[in-house]
Amino acid sequence: MKIFISSVIGGFEDFREAAAEAIGTLGHQVIRSEDFSATPDSPQIACLAGIRQADVVVVLLGARYGPVQASGMSATHEEFGEARATKPTLVVIQGGITPEPEQAALIQEARDWSGGGIAPAFRDPDDLKTKLIRGLHELELSRAAGTADPDEMLNRARGLIPAPNSVNETSLILAVASGPRQPVLRPTELEDRQLARDLMQDALFGDAALLDAADGTSTRVQGSVLSIEQARARIAIDTEGSITIVRPTHRNRGWDGSLTALIDEDIKEDLDRGLRFADRLLERIDPTRRLTHVALVAALLRGSYTAWRTRAEHAASPTSMTMNMSGRDEAVAVLAPPSRPRPALHHQASELAADLTAVLRRQATERS
Image 1: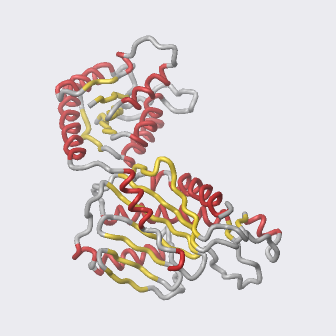
Image 2 (image 1 turned 180 degrees about the horizontal axis):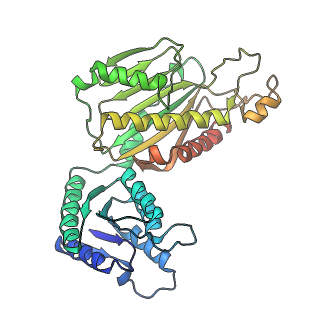
């Protein structure tokens, strides 16, 4: 494999050399800024290009944050941000240090993501070499056991979207398929009453609650799927960690005298809440993070003939609107790339929800 080494350079030369020796010991190819040939590009561009060429990125974090770039982040922080979205990333943190404030925040960010793994803390160059060899070996074993297939995950997520005639009103669907594909819940665990109670409690009263506590709620297991159901909403999880959330878009049903509309901010908030709920649910059923990636699909069912408005537009004219007479009865939103590292559910829920909403809006308002 080609392995990129990311860290501050000044004062960290011995550690970077130890990392290069560890990578060479395992027979892999080292990519690091010290070995870059002369180029008209800036060091920042060259390093980010090196990450894109790599198969794995190793991030070494000590006490120093490093000089801040034009982006407002250090070079290592920029490199970590580039790597974590697309590459297996192994983070190795120096022990016994007092990090600078910015570095402490980066270390916490890396611990939260841990998309590839966090190796045990190292003390000195020899200890780093030992820890890194072990960490890379474990990463190799996990990759050999199977990697997430974005196309397979996307197809699975699409398959979770119900048919438009399966709902009785305009409904918003969020489907999350997890990978690498593998069972994370045994059949007996799926039938565990405590899992159902925890799921219902979180769905009704959690920070990302999705169900109305005033409505009747029931649970059932059918095949390999556990569902929490209400008359107008449903949350389902299967043994492979795939999640389906179905919710109505019109909560008040026009009871206040206003016409019903698709409210842009409501759609975005519902998707944001759904992504955060999916993150909590995956942490509940897969705390060791065997599932490393997720594919997301959002859909709007039975939304034809319904206007799409902002809250301000609806407030200005709640009883009069132009109906979308040629809209689609099913609008489906998929992002590019379709697969994201699982921590994106926690750290990028708002951004992902905004992007899914934008795609849904275009799909829903196009002529069918």
